[in-house]
Length: 543
Ligand SMILES: [Zn+2]
Ligand SMILES: [Zn+2]
Image (cartoon, rainbow, N blue to C red):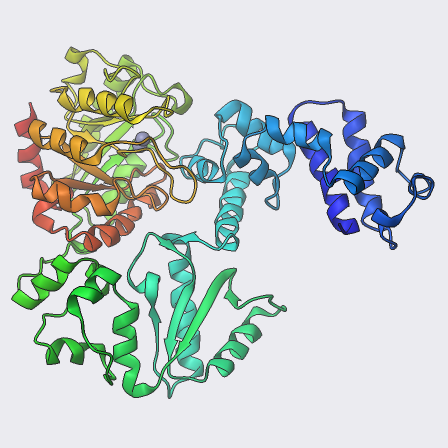
C-alpha cells in the first residue's frame, strides 16, 4: 500500500465522519493527517511505531490506524462508516468539487443518494433554493456530473454527441484525403455510449497522435474532452462493409447474413442485395431486415414531426421559467401547443400545487391563450402523483377538470414487481388519467427503477386507452425503447415528452425521437405528432 493510498483513506475517513456529524476535532485531525502523510517520502508501511509518531500531525490514534492497515489491510473505523453510508453517497464524495457538506445537505434535504439522482435534481431545479447552493452551483454541479459519468467509462448519448461531432469535424479537416465517420454505438444512437468510435482510412497512429495533440496534456488513454475514443482503421475498398458491420445489432447482422466483401460505400451493400436502405439506428432486429427486404420499412418519426410539447413544468411547481416564458418559448420554437403539467399536491418536494393554485394557473392559461392570435394553445394539464395505493392525489371531481392528466410515481420507489404492477394498473384504470409518465422511474447509469411486468402494463394501457410516455430526458428515456414495439402491436400510442423544468429542455424531445426511431415509431403512432386541430380533438375526446 503506497503512502498516497494510506493518506487517501484518512481523507475519506474525515469526509464520511463529517457526513455523519462526528466530532469536528477528530475530523480535522484526519484531514490534516491526509495532508502530511502524502508528503512523507519513505514508505509508511515499513516504518516503526516510533518513526510514525514523529511525523508532524500524526497522533496516537492515527499511528494505530496505520498499523492496523499494515497488519490487516483494513481500517475498521473507516469500514464502519462506509457500512453506514449508501454506496452512491460515497461515490459522490469522491467526485471532484463535492465536499461532505454539500453531499450531506443533498442527502438529508433532498433524499438524493446517487450521482444520477443528483444530476436529475439539477435538471429539475431542486438545488436552486437549497441553502448554500443556488443557480450557479447547480450549473457547476451539473457539468461536473456529466464529466464524471464520462470519466467512468459510460455516458449518456446526449452528453457526448456534440463532442463526438466536433471531434469528427476536426479529424475530417486534418485528414481531408481520407474517409472518416462516426461509427458504432453513437451512430446507432444508443442511449448509453462507451466510447466515441471512429472509422477511418487514415493511419491509426497518425490520428491518435493528432488527438493526443488536441488534448494539450498527456493522456493515459485516448480520449477527447474526457470521453474515450476508439479508432478503427480500414482499407478504403472495405470502408462501407466495415461501417455496415459496426452499425447494427447482432440480430440484424445475423438476419442479413451478408458476406464480408469489398464495398467502399455502405449504400452499395443495400443496392447489391436488393434491400431498402435502413437507417443505422433502426438496424436492431431481424424484423427490420425483413421489412427492408420486402420494402415495408416504417417511416421513422423525425424531429420535424414533433408538433407539440407535452408534460412541462413552470414556476407554479418546480420549473425555472414562468408559465408565460414556457409558452412563449415553445411557440417561438415553432411548436403548435404546450401541455403544462406541474406537480400535484402530494409532491411536496417539488412545490406541488394545491387546488387553489391550480385554479390560479387555469386563469392565467386562459389569459395567455387569449393573447395568442396564431392558434398556439396552452393546455391545462397536471402531473398527478400516483400514491402508494395507486390512487391519485386529487379527488375525482377535481381531477376530471384538467384537460390532460399525466400520472406518475414519484415516491416510495422501493417496491417489488407485484406491488409496482398493482399500483400502476390502478392508476391506468382510473378514468381521469390519460398518459402514464416515466413508467419505471429509472435513471440510466444510476438507478434501476422499480421492477415491472412491461407486457402486463402495456396491455393494461391498451385496455384503458392510456397513452404511454417516452420521457425524453436523456437520463430517463423511460419507457425503455425496446418495449415500444409491444406497445405499437397493442395499438398504444406513445407521447415523446420533454418533462422540461427549464424552457430550453423542451429540446430533450430529440433524444426521445432518437430512441423511438430505434423502435420503429412512426408519426401516426405518436401523440404529440398530432397537429393543433387533431390534438384539440383528442383532448376533447377525453372528457
Ligand atoms: Zn415526474
Ligand atoms: Zn415531470
